[in-house]
Structures are given as C-alpha cells and as structure tokens.
Length: 384
Image (cartoon, rainbow, N blue to C red; front, side):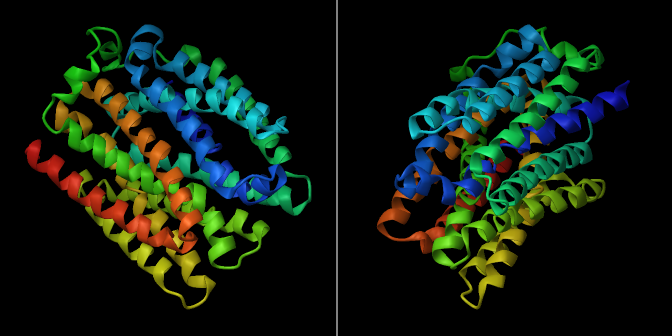
C-alpha cells in the first residue's frame, strides 16, 4: 500500500508539471493570433501566479481540514477544467478568466504534497518526485510543438494536456483510500494553524521566502520567455522554439533523476550549492554568441543545475524550522515562490519590449546571485 501510494504521488507530480511550461512554448503563436503585444504573456502569468499565491497561503488550513489526498484530487481536477477552458478560448479575455482556476488549482496541492513527502520520505524521493514533475513539464512543450507542427493550433495542444489531467484526476480519485495514516500524518490535524505574521517572525523565514521568490522567478522567466528568446534573439522558427524551449525541463528532469542517487551520499546543502554552480555555467553559455547550439546547451545546463535546488531546500525545511512548522513554512514559501513567478517574468517582458530579449541572460544572472546570497544567509540564521 505504501509503495502504491508513492506511485500515485509520482503521478500527481507529473500532473503538476504538465501545464507549467505550456504557455511559454505556445505563446510565440498565441500572441500573433490574438494580435496583442508579446508582453501580454506576463499578464496571464501574473493571474495564474496570484491564484497560486492565494491557494498556497491556504494550504495549511485546507490540508488540516481535508487531508492531503482530497486536496490533491480537487486541485488537479480544477486545473484540468482550466486547461479545457483554455483550449476553448478565442479571446485574450477568455484566457484571463480561465487563468484564475489555472492558478488556484496549483498552489495548495503543491504545498500539501511537498510537506507530505518531506515528512514521510527520504530526500532521494523528493528529487525523484520532482524528476516526475520535470517529465510533465518537458512533455508539455513537446506535445505543443508536435501539435503545432501538424498545423492543428495551440488550442488542440491545451486540449490534449487537459484530457491527460482529467485521466490523472480519475486515478487520484480511485487512490483516496490509500491516503491512510502515516507516522507523521497526525501533524495535518493536531495543531492550530500559524498566522502569516507568526511565520514571518520565525528566524530565517524571511530569507528562505526570498530564496524561493528568486528561484521561481528565475525558473518561470526561463519557462515563459525561453521560446521567445530563441525566436526573436536567436532566429529559431516558432515551431522549433516551442520544442527546444523544453530542453530546460529536460535538463531538470535528467538532473533530478541523478540527484536522487547523489543525495544518498551528499547532504541537501551540498546539493543546492553544487546545483547553483551549474546554473551559473549554463547562463554563461547563453551569453556566448557562437551559434545556436550554445543557447541550447545553456538551457540544458541551467535546467540541470536547477534540478537539486528546489527539492533539496524543501526537504531541508523540517531541519531548519522543525517538523511542527513545516507545513506552514512550506505554504508561505510556495506563496513567495509564486509571487516571484507573478512579478518577475512580466517585468522581464516589459524590459524586453523596451530593451530587447537579449537582456534574457543578464536578467537570469541577477536572480541567480540573489538566490546564492539569500540561501547562505538562511544557513547562518538557522545555524545549520
């Protein structure tokens, strides 16, 4: 039963990844069809992020009330409905409407599942579970690129992903009896929820929130704008860029598969530091102007470096702040992360409109240095 539940959680992480990179891969085609500025992708990204922030902040209360299993089912089902809504949209206003449940469906399940895995499984499982997320995130652009190559339009791409989410929702519903009591499941219900003010006062909390803000700002900026960078800055075709933008997620997926084994030997802190060094190397490749191949290598390396950062920091939360505060801390960290996805990619869109998309690697470098500084500050304050 325990192993079967782990398989179900793996599937849930795939479902979390499937929609994450769709907008970035489809946008070079979408914005032309709607006859709107390229920067409008930032508005959609912002709406989705606001929804995830709201649901992330409510994750502790929802998990205590419903349990992780039900929160996961509801969230994936809501996301599936939003994707089908996207596929039926024929105006930018309709996309904005469906972006609301698109975001609300992601936040609470992300925080709830993360805490469940942190408390009940080893670090290697966290890396492998996020490898599953990477499979979903990598599959999204390739499905979209395949659909566009067939000339069926971006709507069909969203419809295919929506159908996959519906299938995963059904599987999750059937799995509800498996979410039985575990050694740490009592933590879902036995204590009063912490307020945001109480959480922020915890030593190191603000710094780890900024770390997540900057990390997800970097990741989402790549997700949303890598395709446009390849088209407008490196002269790729829209169809090729839709597929190649997914190389970032290929790097993450392969990296997390490998990270799962490396965490057996190296601790989470070492993994995070090593990953950030590889991210720096990947961004350097994006700066190199010697042919398109360097940009593709840069995307793969950046993804490979990002691989251990997110799961290893999350898995360290009980060590930093204690198991009794882990759900609350992960919830506000998810909110901080999605605030980063809400603000920073649209900000790059504005900058790209006025300066140009070649600003892309410079923007990523700033985010990376902030991540490094804030993470090291967390370690000092928490005395790890």
